[in-house]
Length: 306
Image 1 (cartoon, rainbow, N blue to C red):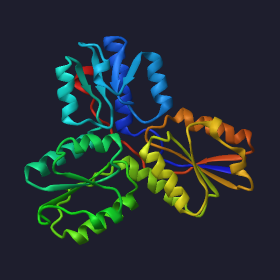
Image 2: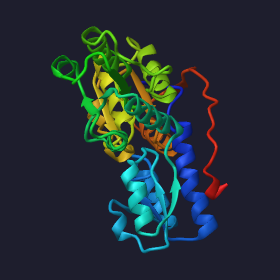
Image 3: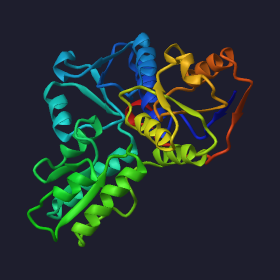
Image 4: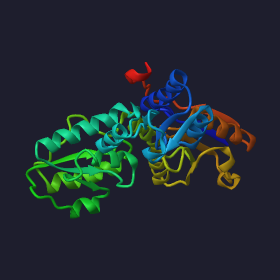
């Protein structure tokens, strides 16, 4: 049995930035530092930061006045900023700049009088934040079937945005329906699905036909990790999402000659290597790193923690 390790995999620039924001805030201001929602969707990362003094909350009212609060990489609605001000909290925004871009597009399209069709999953925290920019003008569309049914007040003034962590293929299928139904559809100058999501999906697709089973290392709450598992499965082989080696079932490897391993954009490399070590214990004779796109993107940190 051999293991083929995808590249790129793991942390994207937005996740690295968000984690560094929390670590720098802890070093600069001392614990506790409060974080609204999970800073990124990965239990290993969240538990490690909690051990250093980060406190994760879903309700800003649980934070003592005057405390520092960090908004997660997924972004928040303007109402959350207003609530933090009302509660006298000191805000630090760790929103991924690529998500911030989608928020800015939403505000612009709303000012121009467009109905905004947001391709994404309505229950995802990133989508909730974007919808909050223009809730009376935004309709979430999750599938081609929903795209066929959606109605708008003025078909001549419709714009489209996309959740940054979607499957490129699924988002493209929805977009194709919207383009057909709304010929005047306004589209951002640069696509919203982030570079890291696209690169990780392409790396999995590049190994189609060479893999007997896929292992995607990531949290079950991570959208981009789930999309990677779906893409692996779409190639016609079993694909499993697991947080770490303790979830690896040896039965998955019965009769397997090649195992594909990748990880979501919020997954630390330590989790990947722990799974690889478990695969070695279970009989992996070789581990090969597959060449892929080199990622050099870096984002500036918020002024509060520079």
